[in-house]
Amino acid sequence: MSDLHVGFPANRAIAERIQPVTPADWLIVAGDVGEQAADIEWVLGTLTERFARVVWVPGNHELWTHGRDPLRLRGEERYLHLVDVCRRLGVVTPEDPYPIWTGAGEPVVVAPLFVLYDYSFQLADLPPPGDGLARTAVSRAVVSTDERWLHPDPFPTRAAWCDDRVTKTERRLAELPPGLPTVLVNHFPLVREPTAVLRYPAFAQWCGTVRTATWPARFRAQVVVYGHLHIPRTAWYAGIRHEEVSLGYPREWQRRSAAPVIPRQILPAAGAVGSS
Ligand SMILES: [Fe+2]
Ligand SMILES: [Fe+2]
Image (tube, rainbow, N blue to C red; front, side, top):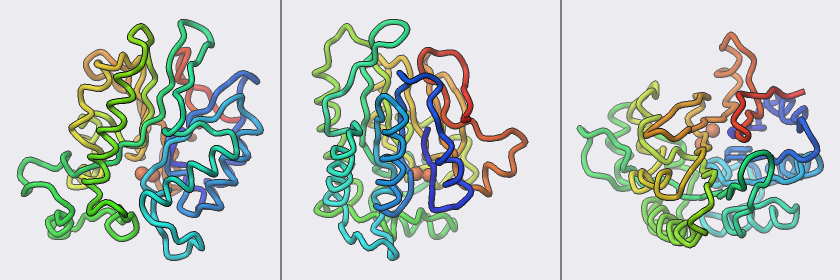
């Protein structure tokens, strides 16, 4: 699951009800739990008491230094602080050894990734990428709030932070044993295709990087798990299953005819399971 956004009371109520189906279940939390560090710690702490293992990656909202959060850390320091919180709780982060899931079927490496975005998902008719790109988006009335709250410190730009993350992450994935399939988990989609259905196409530039496009095939993904778009669905790209597992904002899920499915079953691949 992803995008719990527990700052909204209706979402917090859903988070409180999330339960495993069996005591052996693992839970993937693919970012955007919330903006406030205390909320993130509370949610992850609660989930570790229920699931055999919890695997977390940061979303852009976890990385915000929001004006109302007493935790004032910015950028990488904030991320590493959250990693420390997770380690205290026993939650697996992108900085830990990738765990191997040995449930039904063959063993699978579950790889939590933190790759960010570098504006390279921009539309072809927009000028070249860079953090100054916000200006172009303004003219189209779409700007991610990240431009205000997600600081890249100590990197000069969010694109530079992304570059660092891509390099480090790619190295680790390349070191995995070649025989093992993977579940690749990232807050942002690893391929550009899912952004084609965004309501505001200009928002795509805050949604990933073209540099991960080959990763699902190269690193033997059985499934790619992502969120961020708030468009939950299953799609297949180049024969690989991609699961967008978000809850999203109440104004989004409340207007759909079906109740949100949180969490969704990733492996074994057998459709979705609901919350209790
Ligand atoms: Fe989100
Ligand atoms: Fe997000």
